[in-house]
Image (cartoon, rainbow, N blue to C red):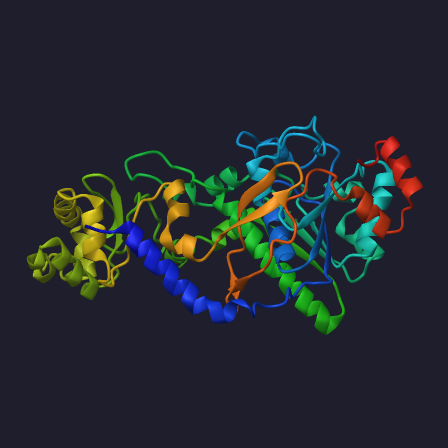
Length: 433
């Protein structure tokens, strides 16, 4: 019987034993001293700015008076503390907003007013990076386009994240993850082969774009060290998604091979898919002929490995339907715990299909302390997924919880030269909050 708890305990002990000598070292946050004006909202661009904040950058999230759109995307949301808390009449903090805004400071500004626009310009004049995800041309109308900001700060790295890029016939079209999934091929290749196209279960195109943009900002900062010049970064969803098609895109460009939907299966590798067990589902990825031999032995079907119909991957792809049927018949006879135990240590990639609860209970996730807890002024102790990378055995610190709207307005305005009296007046005029 496969002992999940024993495996979890052993993994935790081994990983912590390995990392204890490194854990004290870590790495100093490399972007300490870098100041970023973040005019973005929703997911792709806020993810980019959060990753830079994790590396030590001082990210000032400039929100409208109503805040980032995702503040209202609830339920679910964090439970409000009882008693005296900031903004007691406001809705609770949405889980969506909390996931991509750690380590930032928030100011709330109406920069459609002349006074608000002046605040943003002062921030830009003192910053290294600006991140925005407005429809191309919209910030130009406010006097905050690239050329205007370059005049304010010639060394600025101006990062534009959009649906379709800054030029071309679709430049001014609104870009949403699910629409780009459809237009850029991802939805066409996702889903059951006998069913309709399906979207990916998370906004993968947004996430990929945020990762590309984060790398681009780091590259521009390194370039500025050499040249002394800023840059205009054009990062967008459609190009990020097409780049993410990887071998599917290459198959078409090299061989004019158009992909189709395969569910959980792989078009070029067999067996490489989910198989139903008595009480759950098992993902198996048999990547070469040697692994197939071992897999057949695990199934108690050694004769399959020597069959001409299945002995090579090419043959297995050609005889996919027959082979998958034979494997399904074997695997369905036993519970998933049996197969997890049988496959363990055999060198074959495999894993159960976990729901989100089991994902966070996974022994490896627990052992590596991926989940962090922080104190939020309105929600109390909350859990977040921590930075995904370790340096010398340690993650970058979560220094600040995701901010409530306007949490740092007074603090930031004071730092850029406004007096308490001026800030009070701006709040009275509803220029800031």
